[in-house]
Length: 271
Image 1 (cartoon, rainbow, N blue to C red):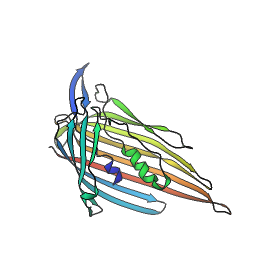
Image 2: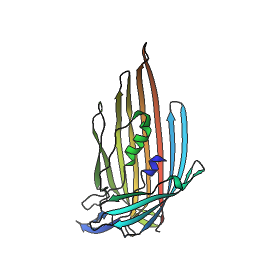
Image 3: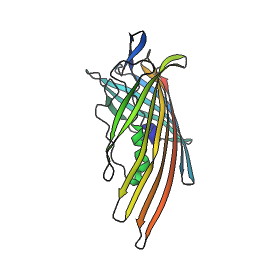
Image 4: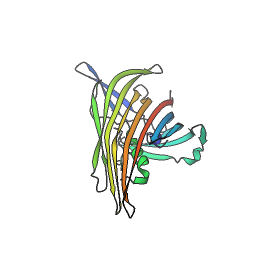
């Protein structure tokens, strides 16, 4: 469920149309009216295999977002609240979820850059989910046509012996598709990143190697200025190898983790 909550980003945008060399172009910006309420239904399916132990989780979320303020510079202040949550058939009280408030500029970037803290070994899975959970829809500063790509760079701070890294997210305007009989612009998103982390203590060393891949899409309806659908598939696989001195010898252990997460979100309102 943690992965889903990372995607509770405002998805209201205004599209300006233009023409260049007979090709249809769009200038995409986040821009909407203050007080607008947006309702979502999000379903996620997670399968995790740790060595020979399998876990399976289905989560459904009903989320309400609200544009609290539109600043003079076009920045949006929005709130997000989980109104209903069901995990593997069990209802989780909505009171357990806090209202989050954030600000983003017209291109979709947060007013304050994302801060990704270094991982701790005992929270490695949560850190990886948080890392890839920062992927959201952003727009380029220039006009785009069908087939055009743009990118977002995210810096990752890591402690020694690891080195800081940058993560590249690629977006592409794929074309037009209908969602519930409404013509939308389909914008794909892709991310592929190696996983290589190390920890060193006095009598223990741990090395994690693997990779992660995220693929998904946003279906944006220019007529209402909203994303009508978003879908993501995240695959994470890694090997954790540890070596510890027990006073007599080095004891080695290995853990294999594979995690597949599928997220589907549909706009409930406005229609």
